[in-house]
Image 1 (tube, rainbow, N blue to C red):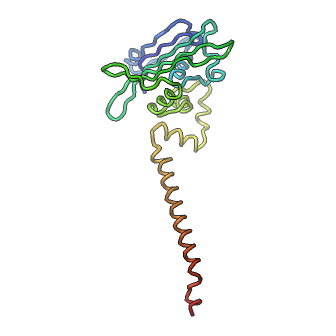
Image 2 (image 1 turned 180 degrees about the vertical axis):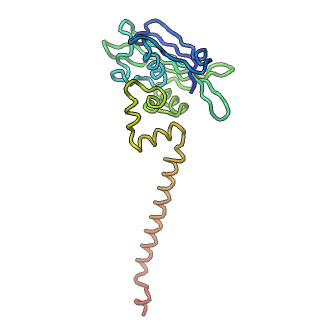
Image 3 (image 1 turned 120 degrees about the vertical axis):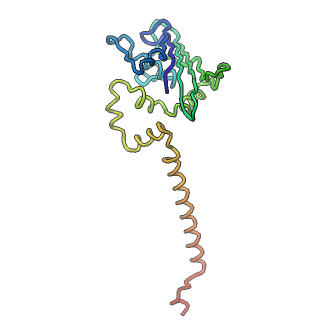
Length: 218
């Protein structure tokens, strides 16, 4: 995934609308985000995660506390590119949140859009559908994304301490190897069940025939 553009407003320290052009930043091949504590460095990564998955891991309840205290609404839009199958596709995820009470923050709008040469095509505009589209196209759920792409502060030790099963599942999703992992295991399990069933049928038939050994015949 290659970041293209990020727009945000009303998120934590970014009260007014801001826009980051990652295409320009990526021209040099690598770039850094610098600033004093509290200047909003991590909030940029939070905005990307929020746009993609609709919540931020370090925020209470996933969304509470992400909105600027002086604002009633929050908006994020993240444009990115995906390469695969010999072609490049560009998408944009938009989400808007509204304050409903003193601390509660709820989703008010969400859209998953593909940017085509002939115009924009909305692939999903409902919360569950947008979340599903993000995971299907990127190939990562939120846990995978925050472990392999945007690693929050203090989470590196958690990444290193993943169990074998958790690490295997994450790598399967990351490199799209499900057909060699879960898919192959499911096929093998199916063949084992078929063999066990055939063996049980043969045993039942043998039992129905009675004792036909050489000793019994003699």
